[in-house]
Image 1 (cartoon, rainbow, N blue to C red):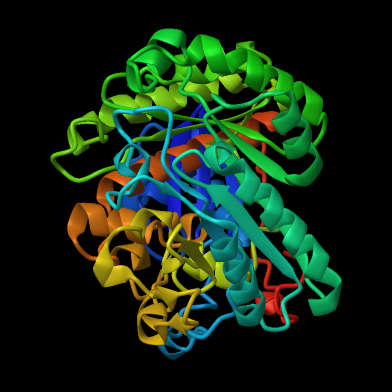
Image 2: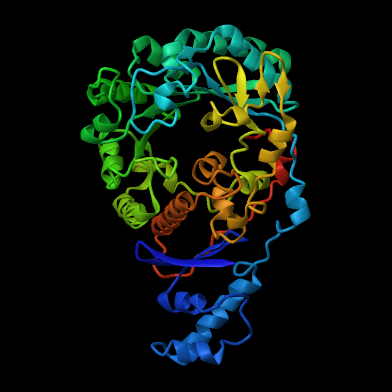
Length: 475
């Protein structure tokens, strides 16, 4: 399978199975657009007739050049992963390597698009006590097997509302790392309202990454992210975020925003965040059920896709000045095989734990009783349900098998599928369409950054790490 497209003035072909990316001239792209399978020895006569704007001999020469790429395994390559038995045999009892620890089911903002019912996930406002957090750490150590590296994301609601639990949890985890030969990597997501000097110093010392929630321009942010008393939050949190980001230096952080149907000109929000001095920016589409007034709908796609290309044009030539999360794509190495096939690992490698100690496949399933997997208090874990999530991959999801972007997005989001289609296996086509457009823009930006002009170009992403063989120790 190949995918041809034009973005940022580049004519590009992606060989899906090898991961090779080619920047071609218009003639080569027009030739490929007529093909639906491997190229034969000679350019078909009817292709010459269907492209009368080109000299026949030049078309034949272009065909020969494309054939050379095919002979090198860089066009119409075989799918080395396409083995239904192998796809179904992906590990279903994978070690749990990441926790989303819901230390707070409460929040001091009332974001209109909040999937978590303004912070309490529909389960009542509460915070996690240290005993529950301690049991969660013990549980993930037991479930992580021989894996050394464990990720813990402090989440909410607003986790700074449970800062004492956060600090005691980090202290406890660090105290037992050596005993169990583990290495914890902590992340925290915050809206910034409770940030102060003490919290900033602590976060920058202990957190490997921090996610700062801010939607963009003042009028956009304050419309969607008011405080409990209905006032805007922009003026309160922006100076704190700027200070925290400056204090972090080279350590990881992201300013993460959400765009809705009310601000489809979201490129302006990305550029506004960059103008505030934030280098690492992620502005993501609101998702929700079909009747959600803020979620992106099919009728919005034309505008959204045009806006992604608008954003890509604005980012051209700016090098590493702005790191937009959704335009990050690695064309040279890519993730390991399991990651490419199964994605985030929700429900099998990654779970969420609530303030009551209940376990769910991820933060977006919290509150859905039918997806409750167990509890850190009694040690239960529904392996049958976990297996159902583990078997979700790009070959078991029908839409993914036909999609050119499958090795990049790894099958999409189970929660999004459930919310929109009522089934974790049925892809949310609106989300898929946006992902495909983001990838086209990302690939075109890579091509532009390389200064390739119209010269043939290839990058191959056919790296097989055999699921890192050693329990993914390098992750």
